[in-house]
Image 1 (tube, helix red, strand yellow):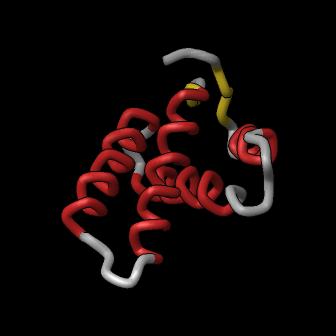
Image 2: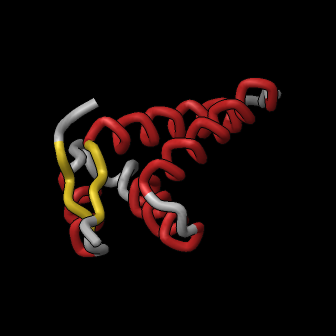
Length: 90
């Protein structure tokens, strides 16, 4: 089976994760803001794969590389090692 991730999905997960990170870093995190973003990430991961363990690996790769890179290349490289093909598209 050919595993495909759209670049737009990677960007969306990254942006949502960063929003959650900044909200949780505030003195008074508003979980009414955080919960919908966490659910949005779950919906995106559900479109990538139904396997929860695989979703966890994908999410970890995307969030782990955010602070260390100014580009998406390390994320894409690690996802390719996991067997995914990165495609352009919305």
